[in-house]
Length: 262
Image 1 (cartoon, rainbow, N blue to C red):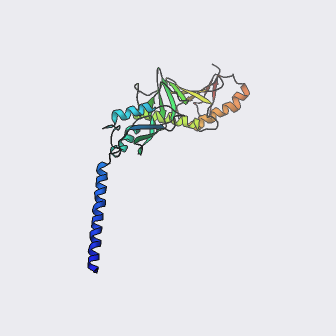
Image 2: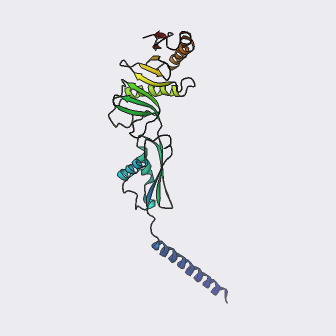
Image 3: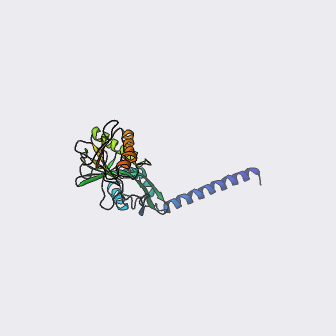
C-alpha cells in the first residue's frame, strides 16, 4: 500500500477515535446527575470542656441565615466561605471550618471561645473571653472560671453579645481580664482567689478560697506590687498572728499593709 494511503487511513482512524471519545464523554456528562447535599454533620471540637454552643444552635444559624439553604443544593454550589462567615460572627465561636465530602454531606467543625471570667450583676450574668468579647450565661452549662460581682461598671443589656459599647467600659474590662490572667498564670495565686467583688467606689475586694481574710485590692492596677504585699501578709503577718487574727487586709497604700479585725 502506498505510504500516502497509510497516512490518510491513520488520520481518518484518529479522527474517528476522537469523535467517539468526545461523544462518549458528553453522553456520560448528560446522564450524570449533579451531587446534591443530603445532610449536615456538625463537630464541636472542645465540647467536653465547654458547652456554650450546641449542634442544634449551629444548625439553626445556618437554616436561618444561609441564603439558598444547603439541603438539596448542589454540593459545589454551597458557599462554604459564607457558612464560615455566619458561624464566626457568633460571639461564642472562636473559629469554624466548612467543607463537603463525597457522601454528599456538608461538614462543619467549630471551636468555641474559652471564657476567662464570669460577671454577675444582680440577676444578670455574662462571660468574658480574653479578647474582651462578652456573651450571656447559658441555662444548661456553667463554666468554672473566676467570678466577679458587685457594682460592675458595664451597661450590658440582657442577651448582649460582643464587646462593650464605650471605650471606658472596654478599658475597665481589659484591666479585669489582665488581673484574672495574672492570677491564673501565677504558681502562687492560681486557684487561691475564688471571687472578686467590685465595691461601690470601684475598688476591688478579693476573696480567697481559704481563711476569713478579705483583701482590699483597690483599682486593678499595679498588680505586681499588690500581690507581693499579699504574699508578705501570708508569709509574715498571718504566720505570726494566726489564721483568724484579721478580717480585712488593705493593700491599697504604697509600702503598707493595713490589717483590721472588723
